[in-house]
Image (tube, rainbow, N blue to C red; front, side):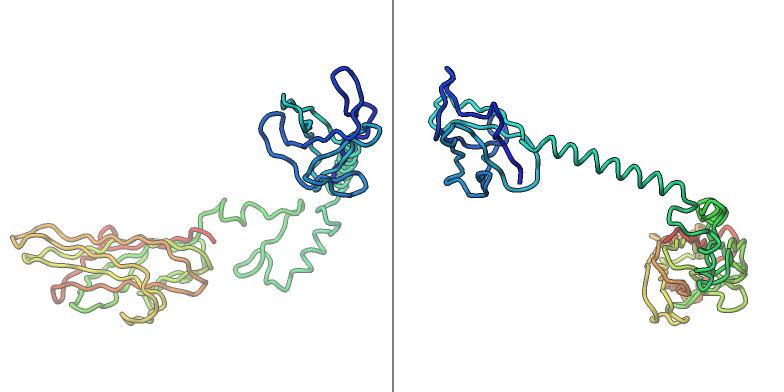
Length: 315
C-alpha cells in the first residue's frame, strides 16, 4: 500500500483558509485527464465508498492506495466546478528512497566481494577442472574446453577466432545421370579443414555422404553441370538426409531443377545450383540425388564445374 496525506499541510481548506471537515476528493493519476484511482482506503484499511476520500472531523486528508507503486497523485474536490486538481506526494516517499539507497549499497558491496574472488564463486580453477573431467579429455575433440588462469575459455578454442569445420568436394570423373533418381558420389576433395580426417567426407568410403561432425546448422552450396544436348532437357536434384543411398530414403531437405528452352543445337551446358542450410545433429549426413529427362546424361567433372562446399555455421 502507498500512504498519502496526514502531514501538517494536508488539510481540506477553502481559499480563505477555512477548514472543511467532511470534504470529499477523487484521486487521479495526472493533473489533467488521466485515470481515476480506485480502491482507495483510509489509513486503517477501510474502503472509501465510491472511491471518494473524505476529510476527517479535523479536516485532515489521509488515505492509501492499493499496490506498491510510490507515485504522486492529484486530488479533485467533489462539488468544485473549477475542476482544479491539487498535487500530493506519497507520505512514505522518504522511506522508499531510503530503502532504495540501502538496497543499492548492499548490491554494491556484494559486487565488490564477487570481483575480489578468483572466479566469483569461491571455486578455484583447479577444482573446477577436476569437477568436470568426466565430460571428456581437456581441449580435445569431443572433450571440454579447458580454462585459462583467468577462468575464461581461450580464444583459440572458440569458433569465432578459428575457421569452422568445412569441406570442398568435386567430381574428378564423368558421372552419368539416369531418368530415375541416382546418387552422385564425390570422388575428390580440395580441402577438409578443422576436423579429424574423413569426419565430414571420405573419397573412398560412402563418397556420396557429407556428414555433420557437430550438432547445429550446416550450409551446403553446390553446382552440378550437365552436358549440352540438341534436345529439350530437364535436370533435377534432391538433397536428402540419412537416406543410405536410397532415393526415397531418409528425409528430403531440398529440391532444385533446370531445363533448356529450345530444340536447336545448343553449345551451352546446364549448371544446376544448390544451396541450403540444414539443422542437423552430429552424425547426420546428406546426399545428393540426380535425374535427367535424358538417359545416361553426362555430368561434367572438374573442380570448378561439379562441386560442393559443406560448412558449419554454428549451433
